[in-house]
Image (cartoon, rainbow, N blue to C red; front, side):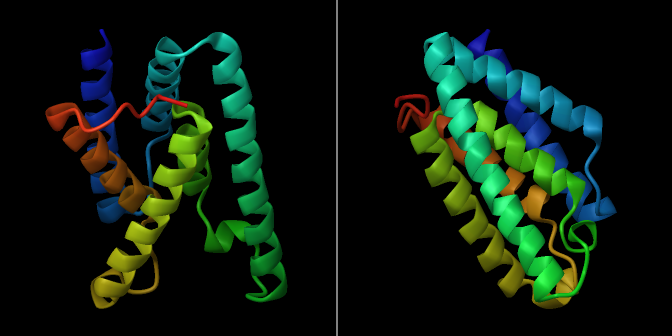
Length: 159
């Protein structure tokens, strides 16, 4: 059951990468599927209370980042948040928050942002003005989950 859920999650992540890169949007049904599968995998690996506490902490981190982004776009860029940051990106952040314990979330989230930054700088001309953030984070997470599934590198759900 867990192997099947991991396969569904990896397939969904790679599909999000494809969609975000090609169409500049992410299907809401795919994000809902990721919420369900990610939450399922997380809760199967730990106690309900730990899942709840880590999800709340992770969502607080996501909320803080979005608040900072809101202030930055409003004050510095003189834009509204939806003009600079897509709803799919916000929902992808939330998906990651409920899918992993806090330590794993912080490491994967930070590394996926660094990965997205490096890719967006490297392919600046091809991407033009827009960065498919959710898609690049999904690619990173899919590669990490795939490598972990194949080689059993570490327990992503240890806290």
